[in-house]
Image 1 (cartoon, helix red, strand yellow):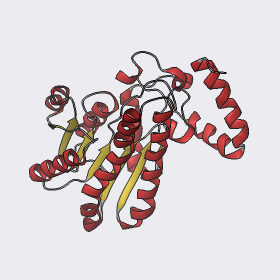
Image 2 (cartoon, rainbow, N blue to C red):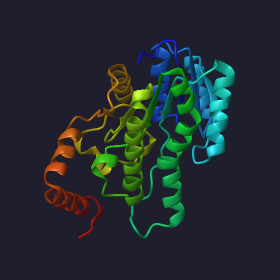
Image 3 (cartoon, rainbow, N blue to C red):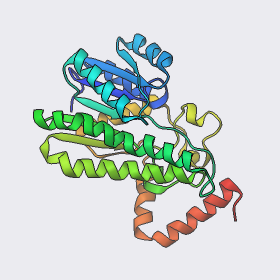
Length: 256
């Protein structure tokens, strides 16, 4: 898909990958860009910079997503591209972490994509064209040793993106799933952890890869190409891969 002339929504658009995606959409000639984020002030700064519009949206609430889509339709008439990018970084830990954190991760990294698709996919199917981008993570393909809820819910994000492509790919809805390792954002301000093993990319580099994938209508967006090799190694010898991840866990968490 060519972004020129299209209307795009970007969640988590106030900073990091989301802000870079919003800027890139504007640079590619989008007819309208809606920058959505829980931090409205920062979202407004990004929107003002690129001549876009901003709206506060908490993607852990379906009502907020419905309101976001409705406001975009009211202003621009339709939604051509939905970049479901908002995410949160959980604390280090695993099964001992409280249910409230697991639930929040599930809402933001799982149900937010479902709710967004529920809001925009029917109109895309009716037009025979639309694009849905899910920002997952390399953790969604490979897992991450520091945070169980992050790795688990990012797996869910990848699975939902796959399902969406399977169910609607022949009905005009294109789907891409972004799975980077470490990116220079607020989430990595205190260190990249195990995700930084192959270096830290800029958000602008990642946004460029997303646009290139959309032009080619590729499903997986892998800004760190090494992830494809790791994913293949995982599939070819799961037990060996798990052994390597156990070593990585010990290195980065101090576990046995």
